[in-house]
Length: 389
Image 1 (cartoon, one colour):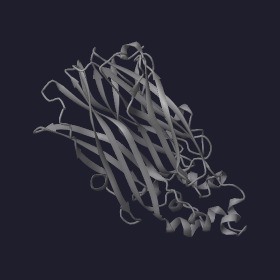
Image 2 (cartoon, one colour; image 1 turned 45 degrees about the horizontal axis):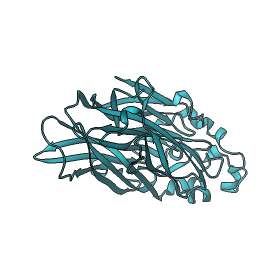
Image 3 (cartoon, rainbow, N blue to C red; image 1 turned 180 degrees about the vertical axis):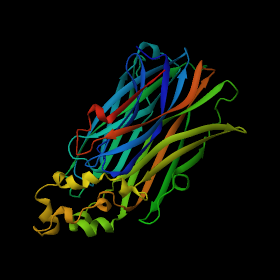
Image 4 (cartoon, helix red, strand yellow; image 1 turned 90 degrees about the horizontal axis):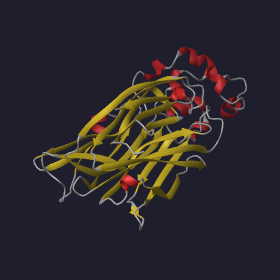
């Protein structure tokens, strides 16, 4: 059963109160067979916290346009601090309503990444979907898809070496006749900035990126509605300094290349037509720290932190068996600042609809309360689902 309306994912905003490893992060649109759901998931590693989020989407309903939701699982395993890429051709068996159409396109409709063992610190996450190729009989599509992940930990809360993550990627197939839907050109935007341990990065100055959509054949007129769907999202994070952590926990942290994350935004904020041009605004932003976050670490958690540190790590780091972790760990270390660089890029495809019955851009805000303590990130407690009508 295909949906009467389609939901195109426009990305997300996600922010913890203090920074964490990546145990789980999800933002996607799910067709359940009878309803659309907007889903967000959040799980930190050791520390309990509350995540604030907002997921963005565009709703399109037109009897002459058909939509199909597809999910593809990926597994990313291997060494820490190494980029791991999984590429494949995804074959999509088309529902009958999408077969034999003039126009057919595939865009990203969100993702769900969760640690299968120890959570690591995010260094790199790339998602992409390429141009679809229709089979000779028009009943299926072959689509190149790719996921890249890199993570590292190297600090005491990690009990295992290596990365082990599952990544479920959502895709949306859009199909229709040339008179009702048009697949246009792509538009790309990016942010590339650095920060240190005294100056926070800024959303507008560092993360807001604008781009004009160059498409000489695009439709114009009052009946035309414009949407953008992601075809590629790339998040690259590099730590450039973390002297506070190194001083506290010694040589081990000196080799930790990953950073805890406080906030990550990857969204298409707006698409506007003005004086014959079509402009898009993206928010592509990562933040490792902000002032005052260490005051938000629960005091009772500081008393139990040693329960989550391997027994053999104390002497291995300090080479001093008489030194307790409670002597060196406080809120400044659990919510420490790193200097670094973020390079975040996005590509989106223009999708145009002529006089649809329903069309609007919308957002779903919410929060996730997470217990921490390395709890299972795949539990229902990590997930918020919102029905979209």
